[in-house]
Amino acid sequence: TIRDNIRFMKATSLKPDDLESMQEQQKDFASKWRKVGIKLIEVYAEDGNKSEELKQIDGLFNEWAATVNREAWESISDEFSLSGIELRSFKNGDDFTTSVEMFVGDELKNLGVKSDEESKRIYAQFADSTWFATIQPVWMNYLVENKLLSDENKSKMESKIAEWKGALYPSNWWIFLIIAVVVIAGVGLFFFMKRKKTVSN
Figure 1 (cartoon, rainbow, N blue to C red):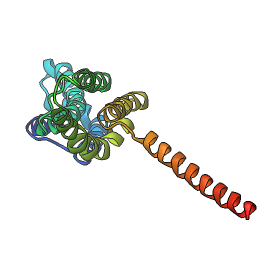
Figure 2: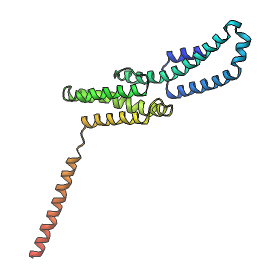
Figure 3: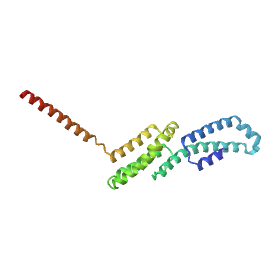
Figure 4: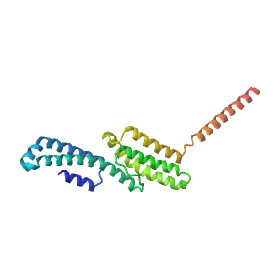
């Protein structure tokens, strides 16, 4: 049963709900095994193989747990690949954070080297089509809640992506400030001139 579950996960790209269901199944199965496993080994295993059988099954439980975690990272990698984004391979939260920071860092270095259109196209593929479409809404809670990703690493990546967006689409707040100053000055001048005209009359 455990081997079948491991094979199934390796052959399928799963979402957080699927992995949570798999984890519940795993906990339930492990709980039942703790209750009856030794008795089953005593009855069915050959005398010389009992300890070896127990060790093998314990090893399969560990492999099953590791496969659930690995599947999360592989599914996330697949999401980026589907959008044409190739990140450096990762298998844990620190690796994932480093991979995202390196990709974004390279894109920031290439601003002005690549055309503006190309840089914005890559940003759209990474951020709009992948990060904000599936990674953040679908995967982030799962990763943080299952302690696969720290809040600190999550913040680091979000900050780097915000920096990238800011470099590609700089804020034009200063233009609005200048317009506001000109409008206020114009209104002030209008009332000053009107008052001056009234006083002179």
